[in-house]
Length: 110
Image 1: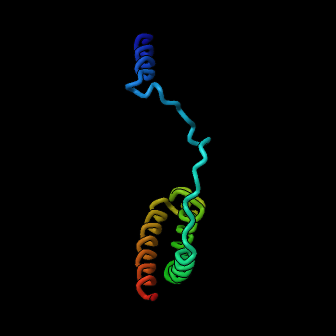
Image 2: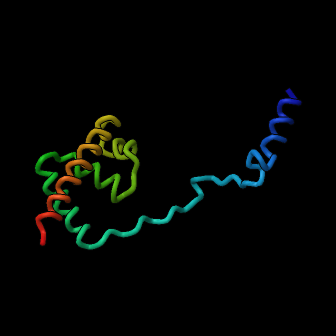
Image 3: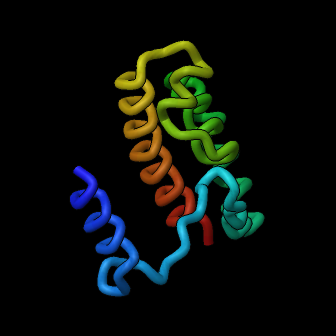
């Protein structure tokens, strides 16, 4: 067992296997915020979310939590008290609906 552990450690320290790389705890890394959306796009998205709320009340909530807050679908499901599969389904449908709606809005405007 000792030889196995020693050889494993040597292999990990080898440059070929990433020995020169430093391990970093992902929780300690601060990720940059995404680039802000142009004002026109943000207003169009807000209006589209309002129209989506007429069709389905839960879908805009999932979009708000995932897109604006940055939660994962699992975290959004937990926050809203719904199953993960429901959150995934709502997210998928909402994205498709919003894409179609925003495309229609862009084509309608001069």
